[in-house]
Length: 562
Image 1 (spheres, rainbow, N blue to C red):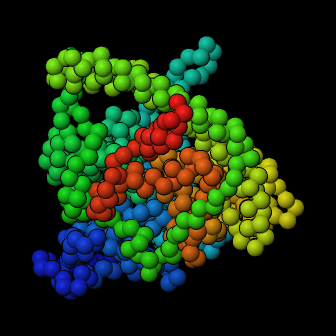
Image 2: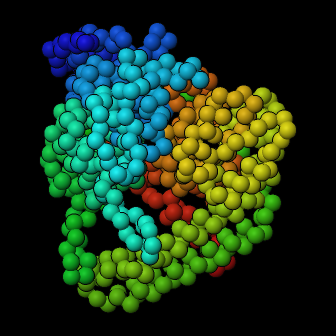
């Protein structure tokens, strides 16, 4: 059994910002942050990994932090190897049995991390675990589990659900695994991609909370603790039994989500969609239950990532311009409706105006308008991708001629199909990830990773953003991309991740004069809430929404022509 000893903490600042014997302060972004996990010394990781498979120093920090806190988030940036740190904690504690909860696509990758993957010459992290000691659960009908050291399950089959079976489309209740797992006696739970539990009322969140109740060691792994809004971290903290350390739901939401009461019609609603005191939240998260490492902080351990925009002229420029003008006209009409509404209530008392504005903003019509607006921008994005298709294919073919592999990302299925068909070539093989079928995804990943003749893989952004290893390539090209910065970072991290030995270049095919230029420029602004709270970096203006930027951009661009 590996042994650890604890050194008595001395709360004094290190003059150089580095960790010093007996001191536990780590300096990041010009602030010194107390990390109790660094008071664990003499950490014995013998028997973990292999001589050629070792933790990076920052991953060892994650192990130490987890051992000290026991209920915490390892929130390394995507691709930095959170899995290895969590398995290091398991190795030291050996708290069998362990439950690993993950998205469905990641289940078998976890087994490969534990047992190794000889086909790609990957050693096991836990070489003393035998295959028969791991159980990977499938289906919604539970069975009695044998004695296992590690159980792996995906979120989708945790809780009861109804499926349509038999004649007449009858609904049949499938029990799920929640009750079986709750009674199994786990000593440790690893929650992979814990941001999947961002909704407090979702079945997977409720099931996870029930299963982890009373378990002494619960480790959440996520590169994006809250993908869009600060409130999304609260269910994760609740599952870790850490929310009370922040004062509970009401105090947390008031302090960090700009929580306040709003009158919506005749109802009084506690509104928590905002963000506030993010620097304080960052410090408290790090002190209480989260260790964070950014890629720029570990450049000596991990190759750097650079982004390279490639400007391309659209083949369908007139069609795109017409659609963009139509959208700008629609935006102008909606703004005119807003102006007319405000004028209609301008004679009322100020408090009454505020109440009516809130009702207007939250009305069904405004929500429908928001959905329609999003769909119109998605259509513009698709038109841009279609117009760049010929250039993207030509650029990719020229790139492959250099002998390197390339990962292509796209959002729409029609774009993915067009890329796949257009890149078929006798000189190299093209594969793709476009379906939800796990076996097909795994087969495509293995072909790209293992077969030197497979030079290109075309990937669906929704299907290939998580739990996929594509580091056989060090270049990727985005034909289109998400409006979400979290998703952007996720799919880039399929290439720029632990295991990559070369610098990574992320190329972006940008349509000249299109919304591509605006979205890629503003993605980092929308990422500000996550960046500020998890990393403590303050960037001005980051709360603005990308869609609002696009609306403002088109309105100003065509204002004189509307």
